[in-house]
Image 1 (tube, one colour):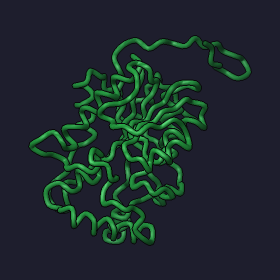
Image 2: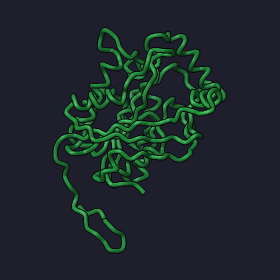
Image 3: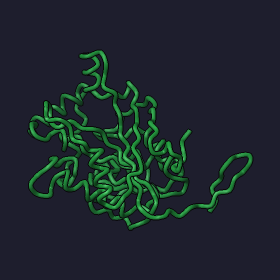
Image 4: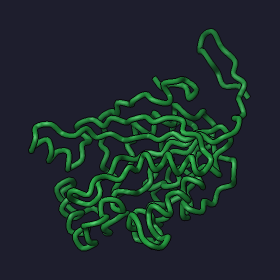
Length: 286
């Protein structure tokens, strides 16, 4: 059973995700449908407008539609726009400049493309990335499933850019703009849930990039309130290839954990009046 967004557990509670056939989509980083289901239930109401600014193959839109929420997606890759449009309205645009009016979205649920940008930093060339990705997908799916070594073909796709550069065309320069845009389109008092993981820099001893912490920082810089951090615990059946390798090597895999960073837009939310029915509990009034 889901919790209400004003309940204290809505800021910290971990979510044990069910086993599911997670990797049936050709998108390289599909969000776990169980995580989308839980977060949309916890932070929105039927009839609310839910947005995903990195819509991908449309998981957020599909779950929002099933839960009787209105939904809109933004995706820069044309082939994924077509997939997302099966579940709701999705437009091709950059998340750094969203074609959505200010103060009109009730809940944002999104997961930015970051794996290649951070993982390639420092010691991995593009040629090595192409070869490594082909090997990974062959072991995971039986054959390579993506035609591109990163998240897509578009030159402005954040996931295909390097982590940092001297100019502004890099991940750490563009992601703060995305977080600022998310805060702009949210209604006052509403919540954005941004799903990320800790990510290792390069292949060897370069440490890790604190993406969750940076999301919090970029949100605060954009005027948001850090509302909380939750964790999605993936089941063993959904473990990634590197976790299975660790399990074989050490006998114990590193748990696969999705971090959900919750940012709340400043301001007072418009409260919907709710009446209580003795048979069915709270019902939604207008």
